[in-house]
Image: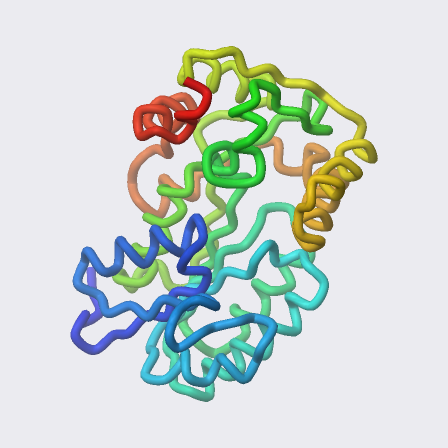
Length: 281
């Protein structure tokens, strides 16, 4: 197995303050890899909405972890990813790792941009994150004891962000992941009711699942003051992606890492032990 020389590599990690980017950056640094954290708050600053900021972020970079917030399905994401990949190629970047989403036509269009870039590439195509319930959009629902979502009884094979980060890091430091699409899921499909039951056990307090009408959910999210792009994303995801198209397991974690993915119950137990839901204790 050939490893890249850490002394010659500088990896730009986009979304470095986000769920996956932060973990990818930390893991690469722990392995001795030089990392440039790409975010609006970093120096140099990286902002997807300000193409003038990309040049400085790419200076000296040989590989890049691409995430697009809040989702590759967002209007304008495809054009932005195309422009970034073109510039990265021009500036001598050799390897790209793209975080993509399962069952999203728009995300797969962005995958094709990376695949046809002429650079080394790996795609990490992920299902919904466990950490949405401890670090993301649904944490307050858990704290308040009721997960109110328009998900019915549909199942989804949620995945641990730590597993995603491990796959991405492997793709940067091991050459045999080039040209691979790793579709990653957890080890079981779950309804939101299953999620609530596991969270109840982990937190020691009742977490219920309340199924709500889609339109009512989107209206309440908008009234809560959530950013417009987040409202759009949740509307999109619950009206399209959560329709059964992803209701099956994949072996991406096993293929990339040679181990099984972490189970939601284990994630919930560990997150509770680390104080993720302390206000609910």
